[in-house]
Amino acid sequence: MEVVKMRNRMFLKALVAAVTAWTCLSVVPCRAGDGGVPSAETPRSEIPENHRWSLAVLFSGIDAWEKGFDALAGKIPELTMCQGKLGTSASETFACLDKLDGLRLETEALDAYAFQSWSVAMDQPKLQEIRDRVSTLSARIQETASFFDPELMKVDTARWAEMVKEKPELSRFNHPYGDLRRRAQHLLSPREEALVALTLPMRDGPYYVMNALMEEADFPKIRDEQGAEVKLGPATFPRYRGSLSRDVRKNAVEAYFATLKDYRMTLATSLATSVKGAVFEAKARGYASSLEMSLDADNVPVSVYENLLSTTAANLPRTLHRYVELRKKLMKLDAIHYYDLYNPLLPDFRKEIPYAEAVTLVKDSLKPMGADYLAILSQGIEPGSGWTDVYPSKAKQGGAYCNGVYGTHPFVLLNYMNELDDVFTTAHEFGHAMHFFLSGQSQPHSVADAPIFLAEIASTFQEEMLLAHLLKKATGKEERLVLLNKRLENIRLTITRQTMFAEFEKLIHGEVEKGGALTAERLGEIYRELIVKYFGPGFTIDPNDEMEWAYIPHFYYNFYVYKYSTGLMAAIVFSQRIQEGRKGAVQQFVNLLRAGGSDYPLSILQKSGIDFTSPEIVQSTYDLFARTIDEMEELLK
Image (tube, rainbow, N blue to C red; front, side, top):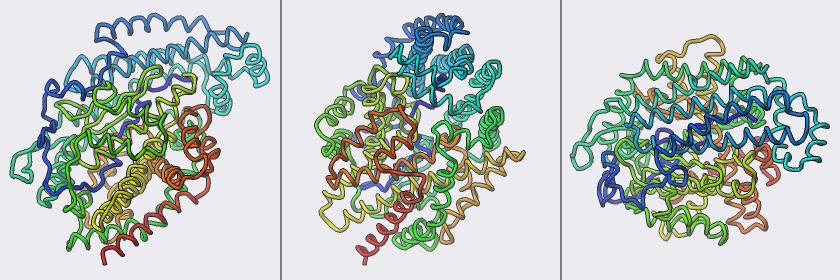
């Protein structure tokens, strides 16, 4: 029954932690701006309108947004009229919960317009201002409604059942009420809940500081494959990190990490402050750790997280360590470095893929899902739909995300640059879009918002379907090698890399909980130790490699990234079932999407035969990783 922190509704997949940074296919090195592709320096006015999203379904412009903001602000005091009434009668209880739910919905629309406007014009002070104002307004709602949960806690389950019988509409809130009862021991007094709510805007601050610094940082220029000067930055770094030219990617990585090191104290302070905020709330609520608090939101036991870390660690020698050695051998290197991890292993098959072709590939890969599913997908993915902001432009946020607002269509931000990883990113984000759309169709607003644990299944499922489609189309040994390597990269980046990030989070939160200081030096030490552990003895670590921690925005979301790992693991299972034509498999998956947040994620998954309380699914994924290396080595003989 809490007001959701708006930023966490977004399924951000920022470039810095991109889970789809796969090997690209192309004979000719690509450069931002080639073939008519806009670059990170292209003015937004030059982006074709049919490749920009339209926020008019939310608000017609800033003036309309301001009116909506003022109207919502004026309604907040009405919540105080509910004090003392929750549980007194079915009608009063429903009216109050419906009022709060409506304010949340209005806040989401305001937040989506502000955040998405800022995302494509991060240099505009006015947009930064309205984004921050929504955060403050959201905190005001949560502060004003802080008595809701304590009052509802006094309503026992028998009384709740009586009220639902009397007022059936109240059943919309059955799951939130049940979840509240489950978390009773961590609920604070009304005054304490109000104080915690007041901290939210301040605790959002470190995330925005990090974003602002990345926008303002003086990243250098380097020479691209043609010798032209190009500007490094958050939007362009992944491209040059994966260049066919070893000199280009080496220069890109060294220059980027060196620049981050120049700002290391600010970035460390920002991340440390964010972690302290999470630790503060965990202690205030009586949790053993911030990890336990974060997982408890989804009713996920800490053992699931620890199982992911321990099973991954046990499999590193036969999977990632072995894959690093394979890359080193295929690239004929004496030593393999960070800048050798993202370039294509088989460059002869590289080609550019325009957005129109990407749309066709994604749609074709999802034909097994049926006509209804495809009709919804087509409605949003085609140019001119207003759902998607396709290309990079000046002052646009890097990476990709999808955001949904109940009652309207989802919005997808891309930075499409004609590479195969962009096709996979498109499939990924439209997986989120399908989830938003179908859950919104099927559930009331109070339970439509699916937990991230399930959302990452929806997105990576579509990537798995795309990969399977491309493997079926592969006509030669070399093409199959490329796609098998893509599967390895998929698991490496979406599962093993994210698990490494998850372990980093566990360690840095633990450091603060023990009273330690997260200085830039300490963060670097922790991260370097993980590089050694995860990449193995065959990997060469360079002086600034540990600076990778400094530009991962997901570290500000508190134990978010492990859900990328579990999401892909479940997605692989669903994808395999559907490709095998298993009876009911499509409907099982669609049911998961339609379920939204109407139950706990592990419960929804268990209905589909997936159990994350056991190490079986984690182990089976690493078995697939090892088998794929075997197949690739066999083809290379």
